[in-house]
Length: 359
Image: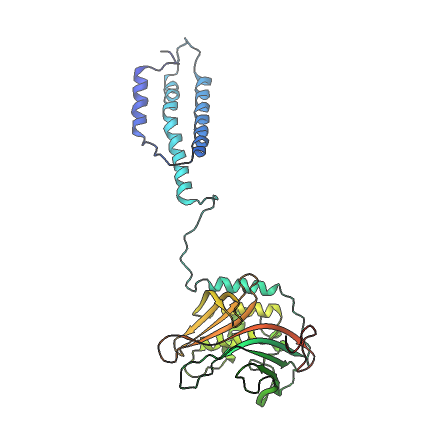
């Protein structure tokens, strides 16, 4: 038998074996990918032929090892479909599970909070990159904002008032005080518009949840779970309000008119992510008309919804919105604000060095 030309029985056996193998499916690949995989396949076939040639006796010499020869003769006939099948399997895995960049996408169910937890963690990270100077005992935190509030009666429908300016100076002394600071509201329809007036408490208040000074905020735990436990313990509910909503509202008040160290701000945002019922709002606007992303929570028990708004790029806190369903006909905007300036001054009524009372 000539080793270079297999006998008829060898060819028949090779054909029988090849028929047992499934046909490789065709894939609708781009022309370049077809050429690439064809080259790989032909290289494999060439290597198989070289292996056969290296072990095949010279032309005209009979083989004395018929069994190895049979394997060598069968190998090219079997190697092509096997290589094709291996290639098909690789292609199937690639086409089925890989995206255009070769990464393996993982099917994930939508987050029940609409991405609120992810957003809050991003806001926490952004807050750590801010530079906040410590506030000294005896100084004042100054905040300027635009405000719209509900001017309707208690029993009547919600009537949102016109936007007006609010300037507030909050005392940072560590001593218990009755006068917590001073406030000036300016605008159409505002009682005593433009006059700076003291605000306070009938009882002297030490720094705490009801009077959050910089030093007190800096003393809070920076571990989110411990911080949240402390907030739940110290927050009181009103009316039909749930405890979760009360804590959410309390944290919102801490964001509005205070100054705190970056690590404490980050801890607050991470703590909020653990409150049940929070949602991400893709687009929301503050009282100044600035749009951003929002974090909200709606309380079915008290029929209220509160939203915090953050700049979409810097994730800086912009302001808030509150909604109320008084008549069971749906939530209506009942109040909104926009924080326009936040800094520290040395005395009540003082304006930041780069601003005036009219700016």
